[in-house]
Image (cartoon, rainbow, N blue to C red):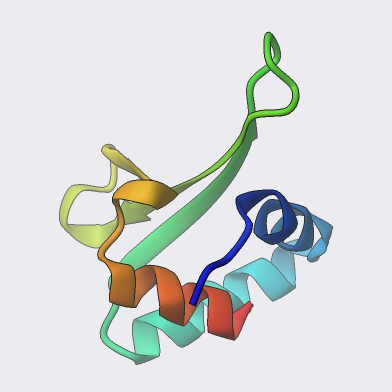
Length: 80
């Protein structure tokens, strides 16, 4: 299944902090150790949007959405 990052980004950004936390909690309950999701738009290129995922194993290292395991990305998109 294909997901458009601009749509996913916009939907995630529209959520409240509580709703964003609920997504992380749901992923964690499924054994995915995400501790933070950061929505980012480059100031120099406003059309380029990213989601960065931080995992408990290395909470200082961000994994961009396109480098996630496909199963993790799919679960995130379904939950969203």
